Picture 1 (cartoon, rainbow, N blue to C red):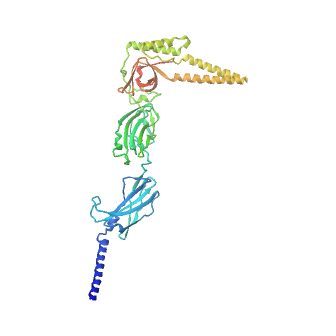
Picture 2: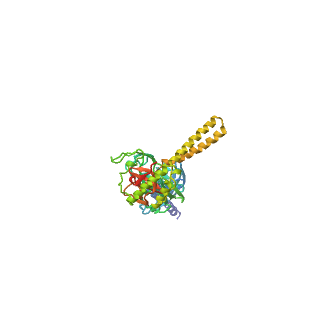
Picture 3: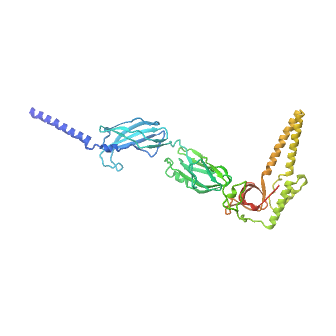
Length: 466
């Protein structure tokens, strides 16, 4: 009885060894991945965007290999990259990964990046079923962490011939510069405005719907540039300019409000070449090349013959008031009386040419007497008189500066927003109103009456001569 029992135990041990051998071979060889398959694998980014100072993960899926049969070790890392941790877990079949395997390994590795830029992490050593591999990573672009990133404004030129990234641009006067303002790294646009530049025409062409910036949620990062508005800028006078400033108030991913402005781009405006021989060249302005001569009947309100006679009479009184000595002239009172009859609000006294001459003569006399006193060694009197001379000279210069400003009487009508025949019209101005001439654009003049500015044809003004 003992002999059959011993033989049975011996047979059972051999059968158990054979079974374990078959199972082991099945685990190791039956579904072991091929060399070509493992060599084709890459660590992939687990998130759409990678940011500085945050844990960023990469994953690797290996089919038909159990996690205990996978070992990984990290090699030297690029500057600014640090290894955080890794983990292995079972990879179960699903529609996303093909589902043509029984089980696999899902390997995840975490890194941290301290600076922005493009990185390629060196391949890591991975042992699969006892076979050594080096598996690389996808190239990753690292962005500034949204917690610290600030919104940005940029500009793109739609005018042909203007380079997009130039800091200094040369153009002819009158050229239309069409440009679009874009915002980036913003969650919401709160407000935007712009400065209206001098000696140029500036209009808003298109204002875009900025609600699209926040359509996917305030926390979703995006590198897309969203258009805010398109403008048309036309510099009219030669000289140096900067691109008109556009200001945008935007909310960042951190929730902080930022007031943004466009980068400074300098324009060197050259005098335009006249295309019409009827447009005169004028030394004091390049506006003459920007527009053709306007029609004489531009303003909506015209004056009759009686009004023109009143304006001519008023013009003569202004000239008398400015050229006659105030103590011996009643031009001021007559002028104010006529302006009241015409329904105008009379301005104050005008600059007087004889008074300017007297101020100059007094200044010269004070200077001469103070010099004589100093030569005679009467220092206190000479110094005191010299101080009086300085004050008198300053008064003479300030008073004389007013004579450099050109003034005229307006025929009456509406100021235009830009020097063009079909431009939008502004506030009506009464016939005979006194206006200040600011600048010229061909046969158009930019004038103001108080806080009201606008363009009028030159023929609608009566210049007041001294």
